[in-house]
Amino acid sequence: MKIIDGKAIASELRLELKEKIEKMERKPGLAVVIVGEDPASRIYVRNKIKACAELGVRSYSYELPTNATQGAVEGLLDELACDSNVDGILLQLPLPKHLDSEAAVSHIPFEKDVDGFSAKNLGLLMQHKEKIVACTPLGVMKLLEREGIELQGKNAVVLGRSETVGKPMAMLLLNANATVTVCHSKTQNLKEICRNADILVSAIGKAKFVTEDMVKQGAVVIDVGINRDEVGKLCGDVDFENVKDKTSFITPVPGGVGPMTITMLMYNTYITACKE
Ligand code: NAP
Image (cartoon, rainbow, N blue to C red; front, side):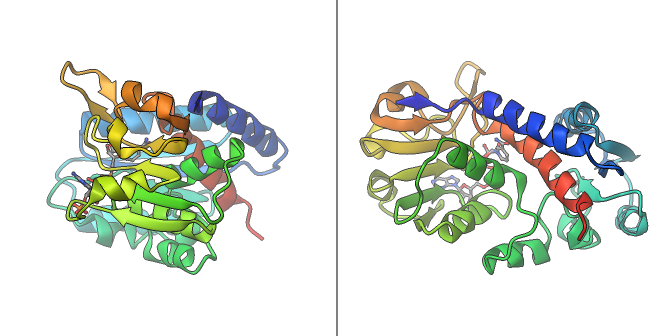
């Protein structure tokens, strides 16, 4: 069994990216837009801006008040879409409840959509012509690649079907020639399906949901979940202590998929700046 060190792999990738960016005459520029005061979103934005500084990416942050109108958010995104200093645009989600995030995201041109959430980027992934892929699933693929884990012909099971994690994750695994099953809250026989997985990716947001009896001997288990356990400690979707010895590779929480997400945001920003 090997515990995949996401923190170490993320630092390696950041170093590689930093070297590439150093060689660029014009540094990539990322605009980060936040609406409202959500404390978790503010921390995420702060960490993203910090990562930009660390890698030599120019960052511009825009803060709109909680009561901002849909028109104000979309107007700002339209301005950034036309701004040649800005290569990538990130709209921090979730937006305050009165706003329509899907409509807002549609104002980010797909070439600048560093989150890969736009309909066009999702469609390109579906056609296996992907350009910018959602950061978390892309981070999982990089972890698998760095560990030399073969995907072709393997049974991959993805728990969760969100637009931001589960669905793009399933499509990436399918594009890599795995045989993919996607499970969700209405899935029947979920335990049996999981037991058949060579690669099990969990992205459901339920603390310690994946137990030892759901994991095949020698499986690769990737835990995307970020939850709090009964004593408030950070944990994933997988019951790590009881599952780990059955696996060939497993990611911990924290220190697994998490550190890859912002690194992939930096990677996507770099890609947006490398225009042909
Ligand atoms: P989400 O939008 O809430 O989606 C959760 C998915 O899990 C849904 O498809 C839901 O099914 C499914 N689900 C819920 N309970 C289930 C159950 N008992 N059995 C089977 N499926 C179940 O969540 P998300 O945004 O994809 O995030 C998932 C987790 O990943 C969260 O813990 C989140 O914090 C974490 N996350 C981590 C990172 C990172 O950087 N590491 C990034 C993003 C998200 P239905 O579709 O049927 O409702």
